[in-house]
Length: 78
Image 1: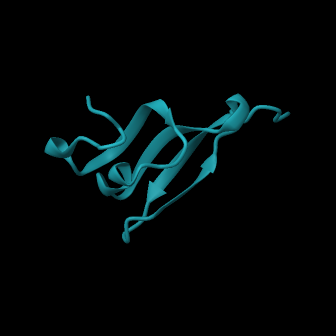
Image 2 (image 1 turned 180 degrees about the vertical axis):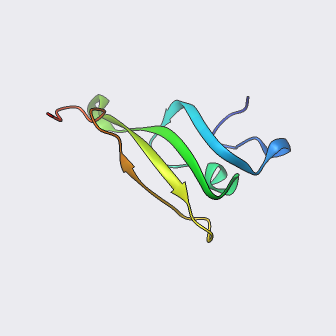
Image 3 (image 1 turned 135 degrees about the horizontal axis):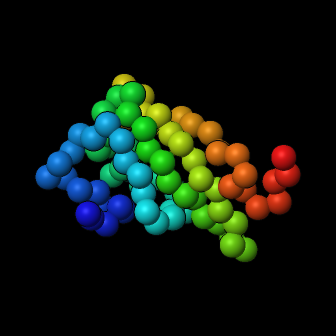
């Protein structure tokens, strides 16, 4: 275990990271620790208790793309 803001370098590069805390933005340390094609699952939090879980896939260039997971954004109706 480690502080997600700074990452856990002794065991980097990972295939998957599941963050057990929320972030206002995706920490660059998490992106740097996941292999290309790997996944990051985390909760993004915002103002007024807003939050959403997001599943990201890390690209070869170290960026990540993903989507908000259903039923995690307040006010969303299905």
